[in-house]
Length: 222
Image (tube, rainbow, N blue to C red; front, side, top):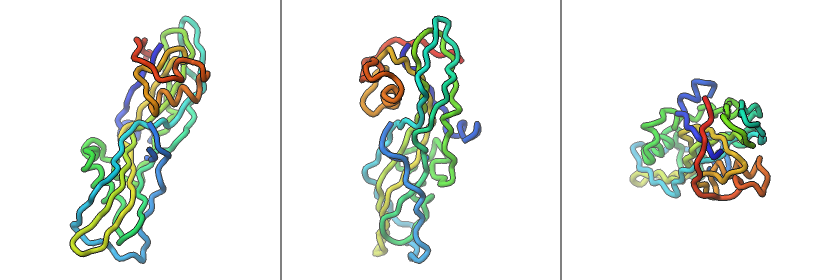
């Protein structure tokens, strides 16, 4: 059994229950709005974006579970490891709204068109404990969850006005997967959620805990 991954649109996840760090910098900074005493930034300024990073980040993992020949349901609950956030950490400069910064980042990366919640600093994080999976065969399996995280540094300026700088972060998809500890993760590289999940729950000597080539896999049943 190899990996079975699936992505759910963030909006769908939000409807079922429902933001940063770099598959994997650390979780997001708390929303840091400008201090009330700061003068507001100029209007119609220009954003410059640096160090833009989009990657899959492991958000939760379950303990491994062994099933016999007939397979069955994975009943071990996914334990949350990281809470995705939609946030802006300001460093210096005149006051500017966090959502305006995030809308600019989403336009820069193209994510705002696909996910209306990208710039919502009040957006609830997905709950990885909602993951359930049925398997069709024998093996030792691990359920895990992940998000695609977007982070970047910015500078906002206009004319001779002040310069506002900081770091913004958000997420655009919520996904889940299941791996077999006995098989290498399909095409997994360092930093991939599947490899990280295997290193949490499988034995360190198991093939899934090491980078591997693409291997055939049997799907989980719905």
